[in-house]
Length: 208
Image (cartoon, rainbow, N blue to C red; front, top):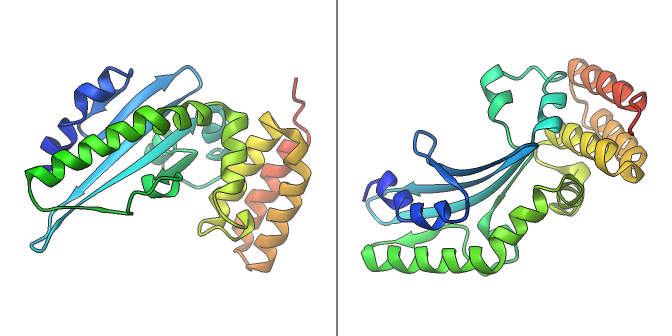
């Protein structure tokens, strides 16, 4: 089985829902004026078994453009970065982290299960997340304590930007909490300085 062949099994299904296959990136993408929804399908082959994984992603352009003006990220990454990515098994489903696929029957079963899930829940979740206010709440609940994220820096920048722009009631709590956590974790002076510049901008930003 080739990865492109596996991804292609979903092509008609996602096209019917407004997504486009980006074959060079092995993902499906639905573009909105203010961002995009993305579905990644990761297929890996191994002698003992093949594995199939699914990830959901959402990008809010205003947030990504804003945070990367303060972060030292490569231009290519900034243009393609996603505001939130979640694996299929973290979205309240009973699916495993990875599907084990040993033959065509297994693959057909997984494709059918996943497409049914999208019809019942997946597309609805993506539609909620493309709304920035919904995405801001999802980031906060995506971990038990958002201040202890594996990637504290990006979580801090994205969460404070989302809250300031779309849910200002959370902003002061997040702003202060993330700054305190960065100091506690002894982030580099450059990182803390960048975040201080960022929240100073947000502090003085007037939201219509």
